[in-house]
Image 1 (tube, rainbow, N blue to C red):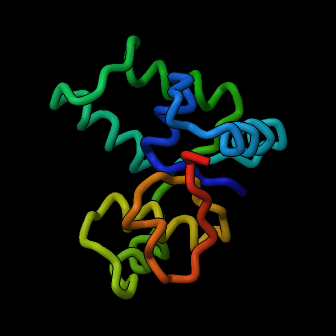
Image 2 (image 1 turned 30 degrees about the horizontal axis):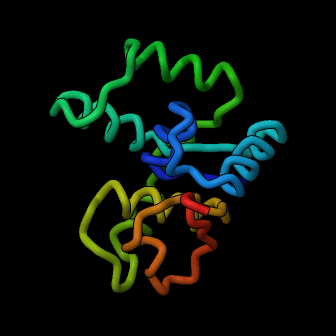
Length: 133
């Protein structure tokens, strides 16, 4: 399974040039194989960024989410095991959304596609792919 960080989802949907060619191929293949996922917390993060005026999506967020799910994106909901694991990530920074995304990737043995340097540099034994590549 391929799990996208929040910005990776936004980049993929927008066709953003920061998303690397290899990553785009990886994500498209995962979507075709019904193995592309995002955490529920990513929709919360996007809603918060929109509320603060730091991100604009040109349609209603709830409709956008439903369209993504209809087109094959899997949503991994937060469960107790992930919440507990997120609280106990060793030497990881304090951002709660990042902790939940990383814990979700670990709990589901998923490869995380992210451009977040703090996540990419973390030595926690997680399978990561730099979204810019």
